[in-house]
Amino acid sequence: MTAEDPTATDPGWVDEVLFAGHPTDVCLRLPEPVDRATLHRLVTDAQDRLTTAGLRPGGAAALRLPPSLAYVVNLLATWRAGGQAILLDHRLTDHEVDRALARLTPQVVVAPVRTGGGALKIFVDVTEGVTRYADRPAVSGHAVIQLSSGSTGPSKVIGRTAADLVAEVHRYTRIDGVALPGERIILLPSMVHVLGLVGGLLYGLHAGVELVPPERLSGDAVLAAISAGTTPATVLGVPFHIGLLASTRPAGPLPQLRRMTTGGELVPAAVARAFTDRYGVPLGNMYGMTEVGVIGTDLYGSHRPSIAPAPGIQVRESGGELWVSCPASPYVGLSDPTRWSDGWLHTRDAGTVDEDTGLVTVRGRLDSQVSVGGMKVDLTEVEATVAELTGVAAAVVVWDDGITAYVQPDGPLSEETLDKLLAERLAGYKRPRALHLLDQLPRTTTGKLVRSTDALRSAVTP
Image (tube, rainbow, N blue to C red; front, side, top):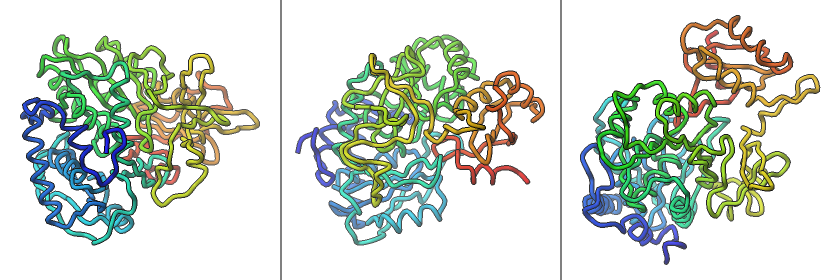
């Protein structure tokens, strides 16, 4: 086994890739510092508990834990025991969890027996319990199983091997603009999902970057986490977090703040401008998917809205759709050539690849291209126009027997006013035929706006 080619059941890659630093180096600050020696001891203890409960090499452990030290410890312990980690977002309902467990049949389930801290805590204090579930091997040879965000439909079951994870960690080390050894990542996204898991936790452990989750999910708490240390800090988050910081006024200079890097949805231009005007640091963009991790980046904000493919990643355009190199299908129990075929992942994202520069421009979901009276309309353009209007906090535009906009106001706003504003900015055939104002647009557990027409219709109060 080598770090470049580990197998799912060989635990050596965890120590070699993630625990190679000095034992006294601080790797987590919660807010108390956790050094590598302490983390290693906690992982070893958790590994004993998991194996005692029934986890065996080639088996699986389902982790239904909120962001916490317990989550980190049990994740690493599962891998060191030669097991597959099934990551279940703690915000899923019991019904959703039961369906996932019945399909994936883990040998053990790790869940809280006690949780401390308020609803806005990013990392919470958890006492976990381990229960036996099934005496079966894992459903696949992947090291980690994740569920897709479900922003456009039912979640997919996605598997990544240990080799996939190690390759992505090494990919991060070659990206210009990531946090460097001895620096800090102010970690905002969930570590159940790929950006927080690999771009935050695994890369931080491998590279010697200190991970600092703010105490609470608020702009002031994020700024406090930045200013609490003297080393350079990169904020890692999603567009929601950019808006949070853009609306927060710092009490004083923040010389430690190096940049913010965002993944997830496309960042509205107005939100990007508000952030950079306020903080004067680069707002980096990262494009990735659960299936393959980071695909491309623009961490200096110099190519927005385009990105450069990440090292070792190939991106091509086929019929207006972006395809990404992916040696094997990442889907568990799914054989769908419209999603993956012949070493290429079909992203379902519309985009272009510049032949001269290689830069990739993501245009939004492929199904955002519609025809109205013979005229082609990009719903992404319409949505961006709506979202940038004064008085609009967020917007989703879908095709539902016509262009339909669901809008979350930011203050007083009427449908009549909204329609007049759009009439000034969009050609008649591009304007939404239906406008729905909602107090809160539905979001996935990762904070992405839901784009399922059924879910959006259900959110409208009769």
